[in-house]
Length: 90
Image (tube, rainbow, N blue to C red; front, side, top):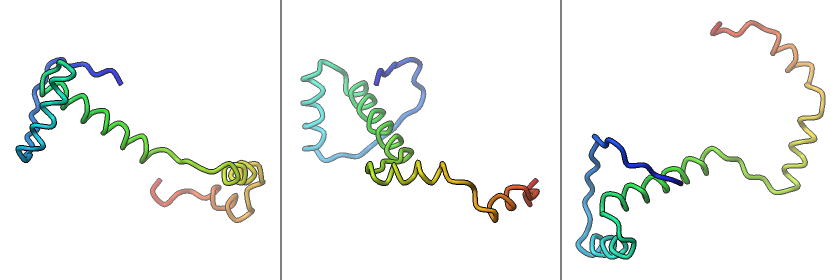
């Protein structure tokens, strides 16, 4: 994921142990980046991964085939009647 660092006005403060900070700073130095850039990039990538995982549905082949078959079946009469009703919130 490409990360752009434009006009940043929001701060994020975290507390770490000395060992955690040293480990992160070591990784930062290996990449030749700044602590802010490295941290922001990795937090954004992790956030994007979490969002994608939460908004994706993964099915085994058999379950996916069953899902497709269900989509191809006609709508039950009760559901068709329900879909014709005016919603209560309208």
